[in-house]
Length: 266
Image (spheres, rainbow, N blue to C red):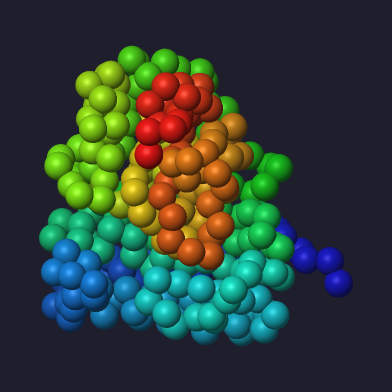
């Protein structure tokens, strides 16, 4: 039976809006905050609750659909065969905890490894960036236009300050040169939002050393639908199964940065 992608799209949006409502209601409640890999890697009861909600609802919607998420409540997969939902229940948990803003729900739905539906929901701003492969990308109900060419000297890049300071495992000199050449840099603390901003032209590029599939799965589909490029720092496709570096951007900026700053220097 052919997959009815319009039905999947409607269902995904319903889940995302309901999850967003649950998160907003949590603002007046005390959070149970834990750390994962280190003191800066936070997880809350709300991250876990939202992911469990997605897992339950997706499996009820269609038991053949698989789902993987940051908190590990979904399926354990070694490939993207079939229909796979890749979910980050709260991308930017530190912002969620400290600011109650600048975080997002990120969802990418793939079919045999091809991105079909992508969503990034800025919960506080009530902005849903979404794309259906081949049918364009939107910010709420407004179409997102194709990205226009830009030069690095006129570009704003998203890059974490960690990557431009001395670090034993990071080519900080390479990133430092980029910072000096670009018109400006920003860091929002949410990979999903930074990808959404690339898609709608608020940023011209986003570079980072290490992200998980759920950080980028939704944004990758949206960016590519408006003509942007999403690779790792070596200009190779992201596997969406393992952690990897990420380089997303306007195609002209992406090419200039890779050719003149990254190629052969990492």
